[in-house]
Image (cartoon, rainbow, N blue to C red; front, side, top):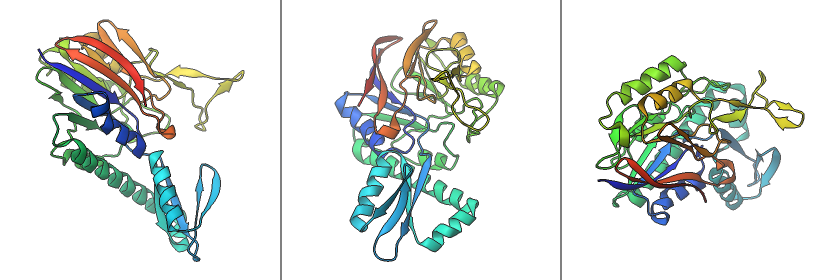
Length: 317
């Protein structure tokens, strides 16, 4: 009977600090298996513009900064990367060219996302490649398809997206980074009926559902782990009577699949605000939440033995 400690996180969105903590968790929590369940890449790119006198300028979190020398630039770049941002040093003329050409902005942003992901995979190989710890990293709805070749190229890190994998000698896991539609029109969004087909296509291949894991990025709808702020047509959070209006933003296809197949455990993310655990029938579903922008790593840890969850907890660090 296989026994494994699983350390699960999601939605690190480019945060170097969170990813390093993820790798360190193998030793700190004595985890056998590390799983990063989607939304690997960041959302913000900050140009650092050369000043001509050895200084540089940039805008960070709404404030204009002057960086006096290369040392300050490197210090700033490290700080920005720790909180999930990408940076690029450029001349004033290069900056003007970017402003005039949205296509070049997208090209630069995509290149920086791929580069950081490649660095992370190399770091995982370096830190854990010679250990017995297994590491699974899959894309989420915010992650471009450009990342797939990077994730698939590692001799150590496994990209489990879209298939059934065994995380140890007994426990099977299906993984899906696609979600239902969101207001942001992210790269991996599909209709609920397509989600249902993707999930069932994998679930029907699972040999022992009683000990299976559903690593599905979007949480099941109408649960405590799918509550998100309502967004208006201008992509602004709706506030009524001083309170943020919340809605269920999870997936009906995910919920239906969990209720139909009743796996041992569901690992979810996607909705940062809805950290929590809920049971749907016999299935324990968890969303560790995310505070990557503060450099805080939220996680869900479970001890699995056969078709039982011996213990579990939500952790932060």
